[in-house]
Length: 448
View 1 (cartoon, one colour):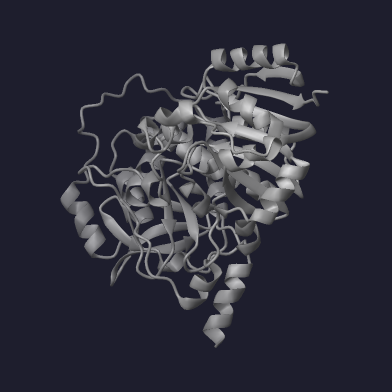
View 2 (cartoon, rainbow, N blue to C red; view 1 turned 30 degrees about the horizontal axis):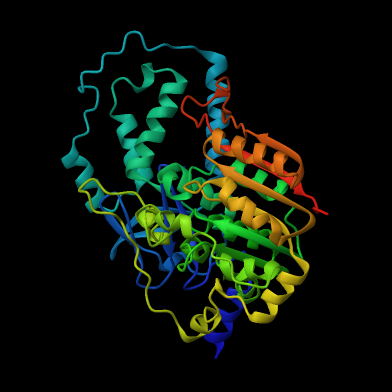
């Protein structure tokens, strides 16, 4: 009973991990981003070592682990980088005042390192840690002392990533999930950048106790972000054209509780549109080729949390399979997000309308969607539509003005610049995203 109570407490604490929860593993400061579901049998391959994820269960998010080699093989051990980082900064500051070097006399002929691979393997067999191997490589390098301080730090970091890799345990939130998918597989989320996602939520005025209508064709990322902001208060209706709902597998990564899962509902556009006229309106018949049953299925197939991981050098992906969960965890996961909306809830939506609308359907025409979705909103309800290209939104904005269906129309282009902040090296990153799509926002008005 004591173990069962501990599992229940860990599930209720959002700051700690528990068996069966999804986590984002940041390996070597963003070199690899891996989604995993924690269990006693789950393993993660780092380099050529398979490490069990058992030590990650029950730890707080934000913890750092390092790969160590023990009697039973490689394992993940807790690591505190605070003291080490402070010492490095103090040493670098002291050295920079005394001398200044350059790399003009260095020749890269692969002869500077006297430590061979056999020597490193022998050190590992003797139980040497990753830090000891890095220090041995530095001590046996003939050119390390001749390099600049920046080159020395770069060399040290490169060797640490290889011989002493670090794993950061991150909590899967809307921001971290969006950043991970945008970095590895941006097409799966419609090239939706994190700043664009935040603007969508703000322009649509999403808050607690709202009734939000969502058209999510980006794998469920938009639905999960809306539900996360609402916190289980109100409803999120994920609507779809046709017979098959759009996949929303990314919602599973958020570790939502029962209340938030219950707030995420699904309803077809046909059933919602029958409210205004009293008869079922066949919406989306001209979009059959773009529905999930058609050509869009290949582009928006269900995205499992484990598919975001990098592929190893031999071409095999490091997929972490979801293991069987304990009975306590299964009881917490009994309620699934995205159940069919009950009739009484649909009736309330028909009578009162939705408070806001968010659309992220890169493969559909915005105007064909908006002209059918806008009547479902309440008067003065806000809406925000994302598209990767400008022209479809410009056409939609022009038609909305002609039909006098909305006011305050504007098209925004998000802009984001990432900076590298280091001593004497602060500048914009050399490689960053220069394009974040466009957002059409406005407020619905009542046509008298």
